[in-house]
Structure formats: C-alpha cells, structure tokens
Image (cartoon, rainbow over all chains, first blue to last red; front, side, top):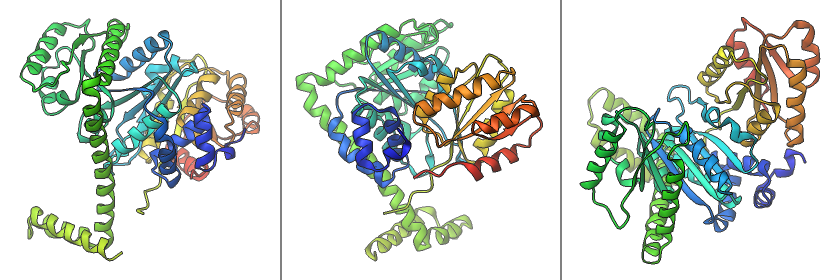
Length: 325
Length: 137
C-alpha cells in the first residue's frame, strides 16, 4: 500500500472506517490543518461518532497529565478497551514551532496496536484549537476506539473549550499546589466532573483534597457531584478508581432524565466554540485584507485613539469587507 | 474561504538502540522548533518498530535518528524496513551522532539523505530539512 492510495476524502473515510492507521493519521493531519479534505472527512464521519467514551484531561503544566494519561490508557487496555489519545502541547508564540514530548511518558504504548497516540501543537494564534482537537477526537471516535483521551494544559480559554468538548473532564491537581487551586477557581472548576490529586504520595495530598472539597462546597453544582480522588500516576495507584469514576460519570450522562438536556448543552457548547473560532479567523483575515487592522494598530499604539472605539471601527471595516464580497 | 496558513513541517526525532545520551537529539529538536517546526521527541531506547509506529501515528514528513552506540548499520536498515512495512516511503530521513565517514555511503544508500556529525551547525540541519521535506497537501 502506498500513501497515494489515501488521497482524497473518500478513500480516507473508507480507510479510517476499516481501521487503517495510516489513513487515520493522514486524515488527522487534514483535520488539524483544516483543509477542504479535512472538512469533508468530518462531514462524512461525524454521523459515525458517539461510540467512544471521550475524556478530557486537563491541569497545569507539570501536574503529571501525560503520565496519568499513560496510566489510564494502560488500565483501559487491561479492561479490554482500545484507546485513542490526542495530546496537545503549546506552540511557541515566537517561532510557531513546538516540541511535542508526550510520547516520552507513553513509550510502551507505541508498540500496542490497540492504542493510537497523536501529538498536537496548539498552533495557537487563530483560536481554532478546540475546533481541531475535537475534530481529531471525532476521527478517533469514528475509527472505532472505545476510549478517546484529550490531554491539554489547562491554561486558557482554548483549553477550557477543549475540556468542554469532552463528555467527561478530569482536572489534575497536585499536593502543595495551593496557588494552582486558587487559579482553578477561575474556570476550570466549572468544567471538571472529576478531580484528581496526582502525586498523592507527596506531602500535602490530603490538604489539597480538602481545599478542592472546600471549593466545590461553594460551587453551584448540578445533579452530578464531582468526586475528588487521589492518584500516583507513576505507579498507577488510584488509576482503577479513576476509571471507575469516569465510567460512572459516563453512565450518568447517558441516564434518562439528564441525557437529552445535557446532549443539547454539549452540542450547543461545541457548535458555539467552533463557530467562534471560524468567525474569529475570518474576521481577522477580513480586517487584515481591508487594511483597517494595520491603520488602527498605529493609532492605538501612539495613544491617539482608544482601543475600545478602534475595535468598533475595526469591526465596521470587517462588515464592509464582508458585504462587498 | 479564508486560506489557512501553511501547516508547519512535522519532524520525529528518535534515538534507536541502547545508548542513553540524548543531548544532541535535544539540541536538534530545539533548533528545529525554533525554526518553526513541530518536533515530536520520543525519548531514548527506541526500537525500530516503535520509531516507525510513532512516525505513522504522528504523520511526520521527516524522521531524524540520533545514535552514539555504533549500532547504526544494524538499526537504521531495520527502521527503514519497519517504515516501509507501514506504507511509509515518502519521509525525509536524516541521521546524527557518531557515525564514521566510512559508513556514510551505506547509510545514504538505504535512503538517509543527510548525516550530521558532532560540531554540525544547527542552521545547516534546518536548511537541509526545509529544503528536502516532502510537501504535504
């Protein structure tokens, strides 16, 4: 088989549905780069999704997310489930390059035919991360993986949106991370359905659990009460319990009274997030093309114009650009 | 439709075999990152199967192997074989580390377009990758 046998959306769709890993890999590149082929792939394959348990794993840098994702994947394999992984790392804002090192923590999984791991750089500047990462997760779902894990650094809006796209989101915290926990109040708490204090063999694990419990006590929660677990990802301690909790939440979101409403909420969040990403990209491109962006940047930079009114004028220019095409 | 900016070149940097010294591999990974590429670094002690499988899953255009143990004539052909058995015959291959000059023709012959020894200017590697990486749709 040569790579040229996977040119075009139809042959890629066929290959992906047949479980061909090269077709899947090439298809992911198309979705990631948002090519016409990538869009066609998603259009054709989305109706085939919905089988996988989609789990977002997020938390601050160094929290042990990659190690935990590896441990979850190994435990899921023991339970006979296949696992697709999307590991997102930030791109450099300067060079736009990235070093993607998640495979280092999951080397043993590379040899396992029941696991597919794809590293993704955030390619951050156009706000499309959630669009592409969830698209990649959709491809893994359509390819038939039982579990899809999306790993992101929980550091900004994009990452929160990625977490939002998952059915179940796991927040990874650490002992002694009091400041982390404080910052998590800002938004991540609301999107996590399960919290894990990783590196729980270090001093302060119980304190971290208590802090999280305190934050949850004052949060406005729905019918699901997020459990707070302890784990040592390095030794897989606590990982079976984590997977049990994920399964429990998955059963909860499929339960009758909750399912319909949450499916709609989930679909709405996803739709809005992707529409926002596209809008952002197209508006920015129109703003550049019209020349208004460069002009307004100059007047704001020399303080002859305030950024708020300049932004209004920029949007007016975008609307004119759109009306004229 | 808005044209998206061209996707960055994706490169796999891997260390086959048993030597555990990866400073060179990391220096190259960093240089390529700073040149705007997306570099997947696998860590040390990779088997040829693991390297080929990672190249497949990551859909890279370029695979760079770093080796210091002297086993390059054993391991490199096996990496190429594993890549081919997965249908991957369009990646740019290059190598670095301790590779005697006498061995370079044999390595070129199995498809490695570049071999970079100690003291190489990373700019030369960047230029080589940019100039030779196969285009992606």
